Length: 199
Figure 1: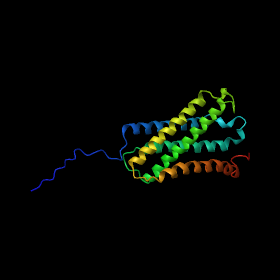
Figure 2: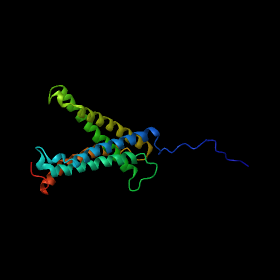
Figure 3: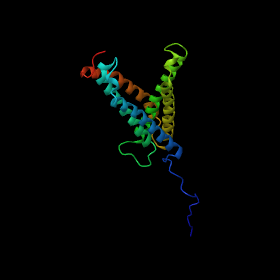
Figure 4: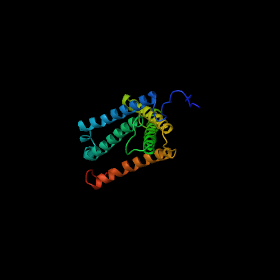
């Protein structure tokens, strides 16, 4: 009689499980998104848009501000869900992968734009060096770190899940295009609704 013995040793951890380092990155990205969202909430709490030369656009700017807040909260949720050990209802691996690559693309474009703007100021092409205060430098560093963090999460998720490589270009191209359409079309819609006066 032949006895079947498993010589393969202990079972290896599931390939779908994120390691401690990736989980730490996800938590940091989520906290960063929540911190940036809190800034937008403070804007609303302090009526930042109610005074100044754009006061007549306060209602429209407030709507835009809440949209941005919602996107930042979505970013925090995506970061945490990307390392969730439990299956996510209604959110397939393909959807998650697209969202992660989309977040990376959006933040990377923001980081590139902020870096280019800072370079132009330092080169004397636009503005003055005094425009680069601590807030500007902190925002620039934050955008670079956020882009890198979501890039790490996107690559890790793609390796751990059967999401398909097609999700990469869809996220990279789709998110910036959709956000561009949103933020270029929303002001016009607010004008049509009478929330904001024409420019």
